[in-house]
Length: 200
Image 1 (cartoon, helix red, strand yellow):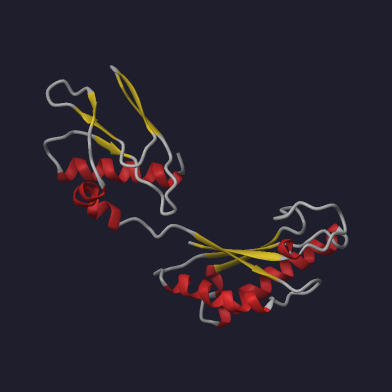
Image 2 (cartoon, one colour):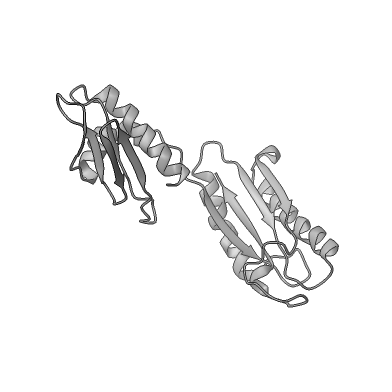
C-alpha cells in the first residue's frame, strides 16, 4: 500500500467516526488517480481481511463488532467521506524536461513543456518544487555532477523568474547515477540528459 493509500484509509476511518454514528469503523480502498489499486490488511481479534480491489471495504458488524465485508461504490464513498477527501492535499506530480547535449539549455520541446509545469504549480496554494538534474554517461563523473546541478539550477532560475519564491524551489544534481535509459560509459543518450521536476 502506498503512503497516499494509507493516508486515505486513515482519513476515511476518522471521517466515518465523526459522520456516521451507526458504524464504529469502516475501511475502504480507493483507486489512485491513474487507476492503480493498492492493498490493506484489516485485522481484529477474530481474523483478518485483505482489501485489494477498488472500493473493497470492511466494517464492524452490528452487535458483535466483528469485521464484515461492506458494499460501497464511488458515490457512497463521496457521500460518506466527502469532507475528508476534499481536505486531502493535491498529490505530487512530476515532469521531465530534456537538454541539448553538454549544455544547460532546454530542447525546444521541453521549453514548451515548461509552461505545463508552471500551470501545475499555480494550482497549488503553497507549492514546493524539487528540481533534480541528470546527465548521460559522456564525460567524467565529476564533470557530470557539476553539469547536472547546473541544469537543475537553470530550471530553478526559470521558475523563480516566473514568480516562484526562491525558498520554494530546491535544485539538486545526480550526475549520471540515475539513468533513465541504462547505457555503457561514454554513450550520448538524450533521454538521460534531463531534469525531473517534482511539484508538491
